[in-house]
Image 1: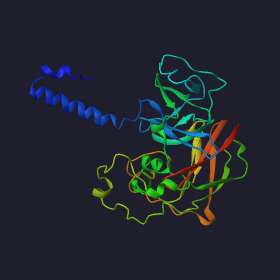
Image 2: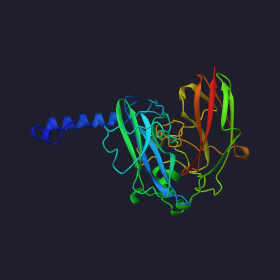
Image 3: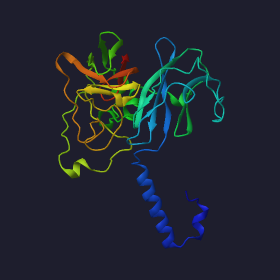
Image 4: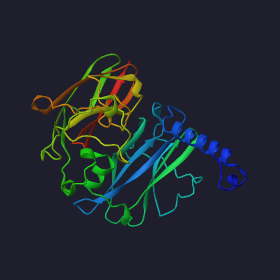
Length: 323
């Protein structure tokens, strides 16, 4: 890193060369495949109808390929503390009794926003819900609080995920999340190598934002065009996909292959944020059937995600895989 003071003794040629080098380094960092870190994120909060509050969390994995498995423990834990109590990153806030608040233990690449929520009581006040996450030897924290500036609504969520092609339509403030129902038990046991059938019903009851008939990019110039907005955009329309929320993702194979649930903007990346990508029509009766096979025994949590492109509904299925 070059400080501002160090530019004083550089000639114009050297300054240009240095700037070019820094620019190339910055460009390279945007496409780092591995070696970068995870950053937990507090996305905001909103009030529940019963007077409690819902806090939204997600994360950023700066890698484009590397994934992480970090179990709940000293490197992946939550704490409920007084304001600023864990601002000092050297301070250990781990308490095994409070560490697990439903956070993931498998971390996909790139941005995974609004991934899970934590409800806090009406008298939460100025306390903080702090997520501590350590990766690549570096510790980072996200601080969830009820500060007024962090209050969000469904429109904010939609704009943050580029929903409805980045629309700012005020009607998004009253958008309803999709319905989602897993058919069958939420706790399953299966043998290694044995196929497990998963069936869900998902429906977008308000049909908003409505599925778009916008033409897909066709030419290389359209597909590889520079970004036109700060946030990657995706089209509207009901969709559903499974992901591995806890457990080694590489050991789970889905049939059919599931579209990505994270913001992969590379072309042909099987992601709603990836050009060209067409949100498939829902299956008959809005029933999604999928099989999953595990190569390794262990405890897994699969997360089903229904989305209308702007809001998400989650349902977990816990699977014990035996030899």
